[in-house]
Length: 313
Image 1 (cartoon, rainbow, N blue to C red):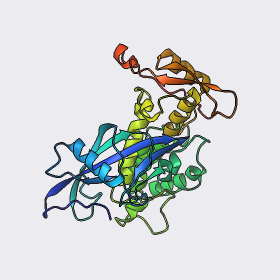
Image 2 (image 1 turned 90 degrees about the vertical axis):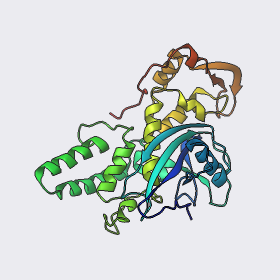
Image 3 (image 1 turned 60 degrees about the vertical axis):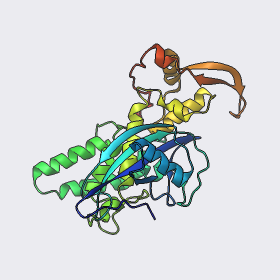
């Protein structure tokens, strides 16, 4: 069972929740508990010196995984979302790490975040799920709206969020897409509130409470942040090839990158330097190993830039 916050009637309690991300191979992974049903979390207690130290204590207690880089993500306090029967303020954090074996009494483990959001992985082109199931159901929901203005507003959201018509896919809109599916009653979390029929939920593993919404928020934050800050290096080993770096960024963005433009971008920003060593693990000709230049952050602010995505024709 998840650790449930307790509160007096009418009172609110604070829950600390961690979206802890790693990239293993070409898979973006998130640390979960309860056999993939929840994110590491627990109530903020009086003996916790700070919110972040409280979060670190819960993650280490539940998964035996120490936290490295952590930043505050978002705070949710919706009355009708999350824990049934209790007003819970969810204070969420995003952490970046490298995958190590997790252990503990709450079945911790690493899961691909595309297990929860299969429509977000565009590395092999638009997922068939979108055209086959998501867009038709969303359009039916839009047509059922009361009033033409609401119909038009729903249609516009569908076009923007799921790139219908001439709208380009925006990989950063993870949370907006999930919230649209929730509002339309197409995810199991909405069904718990009686908003969806028993057979209408889309593929994608549900999570307890509002944890899939929190994961969507973490994915959106990280996808946006890798475009203007070199946080991806928090996920890389000390030495890596440029192809491994590109694959890690692609895994997070859910999009393919233009190889030459990506390498030109890395070179222009002087983010890496050669180690003088070679990797024979590529299966072909040995590749140069690089490491991150942390001094670049002291020399100058990293300029904002768009990733060199390979857009479909």
